[in-house]
Image (cartoon, rainbow, N blue to C red):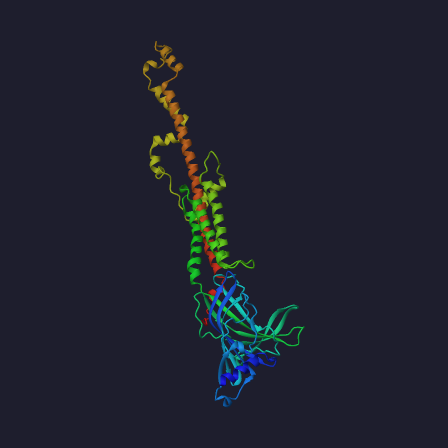
Length: 483
């Protein structure tokens, strides 16, 4: 009997004049927040808690059998047309019309569930050690502040704050009313990727030249901090490890022929990580993300390592027939720099004991004399050893064998020819030894250059990693998360 009496009343109310109804107090109860970074969209699963006074929905419980509360279909009563201004999918209003709770004193409570998709501009400057601030702006689409005045349910906790906002004529001061805990997180399902730091609700009252009535909106700011464990393990650590491999290129021996191959492999690996980063973050030209800066820095180092490796390989394979070693290069890279780099060059084989070589008088004399002098000495000895009948007689008398001796001198001695051949071979061996020594000097210079670049690139990788990664402010942020 009571419900039948109220049914006609609701139908009449729905088409009646509602301009004097004052609505206010809404507070979302969040159950989940999901961030779609690539599309810059935040999806929130909330209960929108509305409460307002409608004087036309008052009754005396004594006249209706003591009934003081009713649950009625929400489409049979007046509802404030509060919408999400910064929506991203075209659904401005609640789509599930749940029942509303009516009290006998005219209080209407309505808490429909909703899934909103709102625009959220992602700041990727410090990705993956970043913090984001997303907003949900609610306001009446039709009514001004004189018809529908939006207020937060916990308005007794509001504090007045002056904020600087960007207007048409430049920055201006605006008074806002802030509630620190604007969203109820008691039923919130914690995210595996984000921490919620704070959720203030701000009430704005704006006036425009076109209208006398102010326009009221309530903006909920959701401050998020990314949980970095996933990206640290799967993105940061591999990138740092690959960057330090760049320095190990200069520890490889040049004779192996794998230095350039390692450089190119590192460069390809960094390119793969860079393409993976592009797939994760939104396409923006405003800033370069932190991990992007680090990957670019590492790619520059790898590119320089390729260039430097080509130079060291060029030095390694030089020879006396192609290059002449300058005196300053020998002095700098063989005599001076190895002492500072703590490098000791081993002595060539056969040169470990100079004293033993000095004790060998014959070898020492032959080594000090030129090869032609050595050959002349051998010839003199061979002439002295000739048989007496080849020697000329003293006193002017000549033997019959003189003609044979003259013929021997004219035709040439086989011993002389052999000695000249030995001298030629000795000259050739000495030249080969000198050339080999020069080649070894070039190789040693390339080793010294590798040591210099090994130290330089190791320091550059360590310094660049510390400077770039340490710039993220969230690394030093110890603010406890609300959820």
